[in-house]
Length: 426
Ligand code: ATP
Ligand code: MG
Image 1 (cartoon, helix red, strand yellow):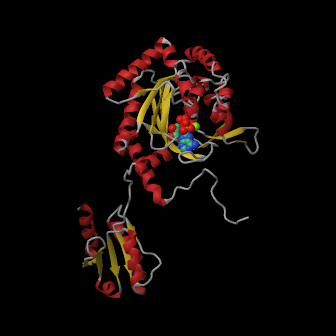
Image 2: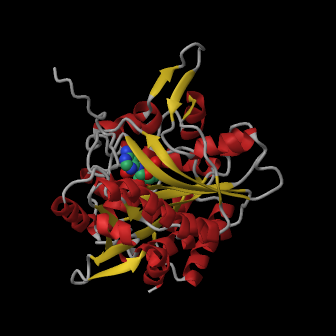
Image 3: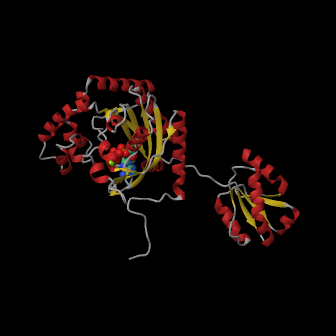
């Protein structure tokens, strides 16, 4: 047995080398959410298990086999780590009266947990950007949400790599009728169905449409379509959404196989998919859940939202050579000799007082001129501020340009801030 303790399977450290992607993506998201009038909400990672079983559905992959569930320490409560964010946000909204007579537009970014087989783009702790709107029944909100996402892909420069697929789940009533037709259809192919699909046939046959088994493609393609069995109101909602997407010039594909992995969806459902990530191709998925607030004890409130897989999005950005934020220090320091080293930090601190928000990477730990110079070169900084005993005495510093052919100039300490400010403005 080794003494070394590693992270759990499927749970990853996010290291500094890749943090630029997270920051770039989160930066675009935060700015877009503000531009479209969304507010941030932060809900707990742990909730009562019954919140998820009641909203997501007993007979779903998530609830049946993917949740991290355990009893609370002292009380006879069953707890679960959130496998998604919608249920927790609905719970919070009901608990704090957020849905009363108003439209709520909310977002949250954070981790979610699912006990799945880890592979590229599929982890046990992953991160979602999640958006929810409460209190709007009309399809304008569906269209605006998709327009915001289309703008997001554009800002990232990956608009050509994702495509929008939409479908309608109708209402619980129209779905119940369709369910019978679907069972009848699949019963005709009993021999060819895989184990999962056989198991699903009488409990949750719509889930078979979502199967990733390519051998079932043909059978599924021939299955009756929910879109042909919609109630008139859901049909109208769907048609209006399609019209608005056409006017917005947002391309989409109507895909009757998009049924989503949770039971709570009604009417509009959608996924943004890419072909660049193999079978983990869904980067973002969502839809309406007009009944959930009521089912969880609130007043009837229509709602729509989506969850976006951050890790998958990062993989896609990397595959598309999207440039990530890279911050480089303006300045690094080289202090030589005891006295200069002793004064060095104070000089840097007074510089920080004079110019706010400037990145300065102090060369902590000292060392010879040669080794400090090596570190300075590696730091990516634009300038090295060099100071030894002579400079200290004369109250000057040497500024070496590390990028442009290493030119050096002497600058009075009192002029340093002004000089650097001018450089920053260039
Ligand atoms: P999939 O069909 O790929 O399992 P899902 O339908 O279970 O996805 P959702 O519940 O809709 O996924 O979650 C929203 C998004 O979160 C997904 O589109 C995906 O980008 C991401 N996601 C879901 N599960 C995982 C996971 N285990 N690891 C990483 N990202 C995930
Ligand atoms: Mg899944």
